[in-house]
Image 1 (cartoon, rainbow, N blue to C red):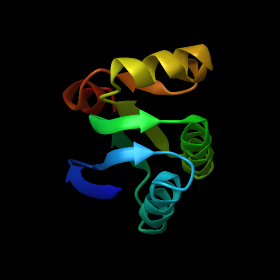
Image 2: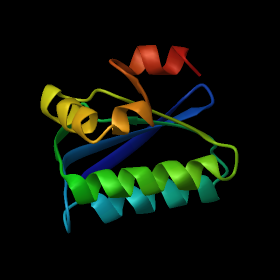
Image 3: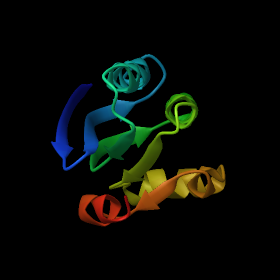
Length: 111
């Protein structure tokens, strides 16, 4: 998995690309969040526009990221979920845990 990031005002936008599955990408996402928090970033947006699969272990890692961000009074928003991932998040009720927006622009405006 490839992860890029950029700063939009005071929000760090993380852009994973590929699959976030057990053994493929889920640890990289967690490491990117840990590194981000160590740098002092507390407003984080994860844009899933280039993620095609997020399996249950990947969802678990995302939930772990959320908990790590919330502990130091951070804010996490996510955007760009494809229909398949959004439906999976609805089935597991995770869509109610995260602040989910359709686009990066919407998510950034909500900070």
